[in-house]
Amino acid sequence: MQKNAFSMEANETELIIKEVEKTKGEISRLVGGQVLIKSTKEAILEEMKNKKELIKTRMKTIVEQEKQFSEQIEKIREDVIKKIQR
Image (tube, rainbow, N blue to C red; front, side, top):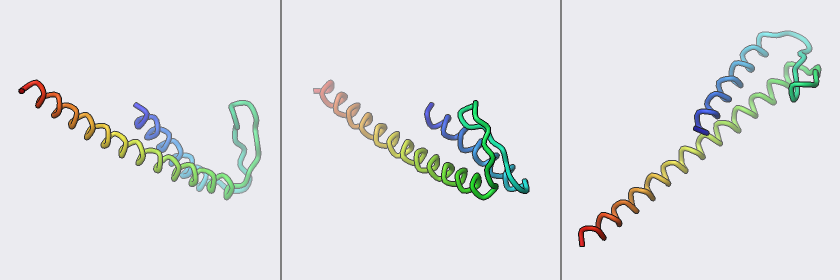
């Protein structure tokens, strides 16, 4: 479930990057849903690209953790089966 949330956030971030790249001049954006801030295209692009990299790192970590958990579950399952068969 968390991986899907990161995937959605990554897609949204990529869309923001594409839209910001199309713009010229200052850009206004909402922060926290309540504050409107003017910023430069470059500043927003840098922030979004950093966010995109962070999301990729988090997703990679989640995938690795899922793999480790699956391996641990399989080992436990094998141990239980061996004990049952005795």
